[in-house]
Length: 246
View 1 (cartoon, rainbow, N blue to C red):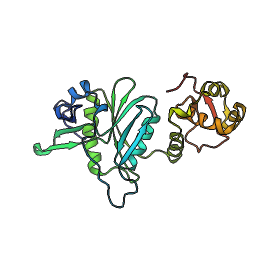
View 2: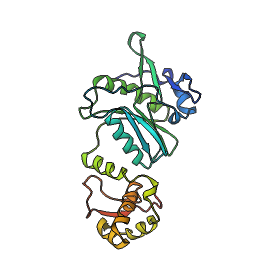
View 3: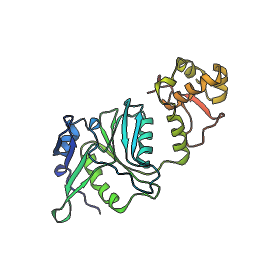
View 4: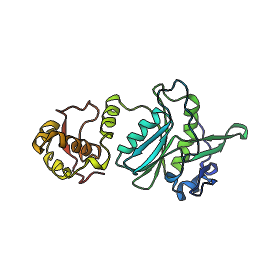
């Protein structure tokens, strides 16, 4: 049986809008503070041999740039941006502190935080292709307990299915509103029943003009496809039935 720290004793450290480091009980911070608006409390160095260096990515969900520290974080940010239940994403906005063995203070900064449409929060740690290290797995137990006590969620996220990652990465290239054009309503109507993408595109007009709109509709999930399989022109899509999507 794995024991975790008492969530009532867990502390949260973050940087306020005024640029000051603030520390308070985690349960208070989770209930009162807009942590998704905070800047990162940690930095991510550029490591020799790592294929993807730290950087920034534009998020369609919040219409702002969000930092990432390594490739797995960037992938999870992309998936969160695609998730219609997510309304904001932040990179490492809060550090959690608790007492470990022999009273030693242990600190952990979850890689990502997301605000959900229902108002609750989601803390995420990102595992790479080789999985999560033992230290991260041990700390995840404490972080999950703290999240649950606050009515939040916690996820130790591994890599998505290769096809899902490739499909969402392609669609992310069309996430900006400029690709919506004035055809979204027509796209939704044309795919009211299951229709191969290429057939719907040809019926709507010039493919060069229509394809970007269709990809944008797929990103916004106005159109639904099976992302577990590689996207191609004969992929069958259908209108989601939820109006204008996200």
